[in-house]
Length: 107
Image (cartoon, rainbow, N blue to C red; front, side):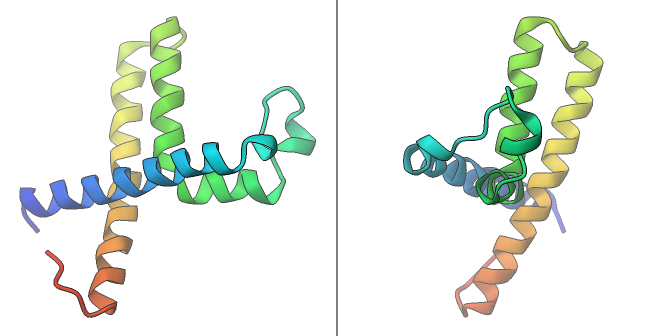
């Protein structure tokens, strides 16, 4: 594994999670989980789907919001970016393996 492979994994992981997040926002507006009623809203299938397939994108957006509002220290923000990057690399690895299983050329 080299830096080019890590870049491809990050791009695939973040790319797919941001695509899923944007498609979910357009398609599932009325099912979007709210933070007002945590117990009943966040354990519905749509919220679990978002957490599984758009996790890195949701995490980065929430981290950006908290950094902009001053609710998170810079050191915690750097750690959050590293965690989101690792999560996106895991997703990217899954995507590359699915591409290989489909018989397409993958890096």
